[in-house]
Length: 180
Image (tube, rainbow, N blue to C red):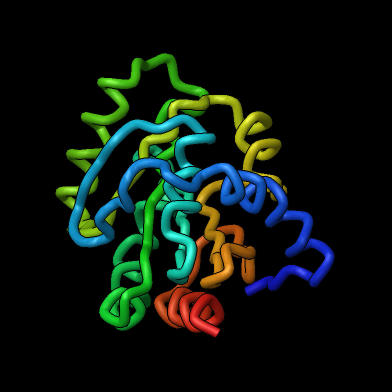
């Protein structure tokens, strides 16, 4: 697992911190329990994370068409079970439209079906921004290929970033880092 340096963590937290400063009085905190699937643009994804400030959050970027993403899902579920049991939040960000010529409704339907088959029991936001350059700029971190996992502490700051498949042990370690 590659942890970010202090300077990189601060830089990566700037877009999130700006959203946190403007989020007060926004929509109610989303329910972290159970599967829910909804489309959000990248700003909406960040607002979702910001609404959960005070809670450690593990964000997994994936797609139904990404073999390694699908293959690691059982490890993500197993490696974060205790974390979620202690109140930590796992959210999937499905990059379903990236490079695909499909509409939002079809993307949501694909994610819903795959999530059901994989036994996903956490919220999944279907990112409607299909340009990874836009997502990188808005999120404020260098996102490479999929799968990609970002871990935010209670303070809303990025504490870990992992590119590529992760094992259940690696997911568990990322979750513990978020809880510190």
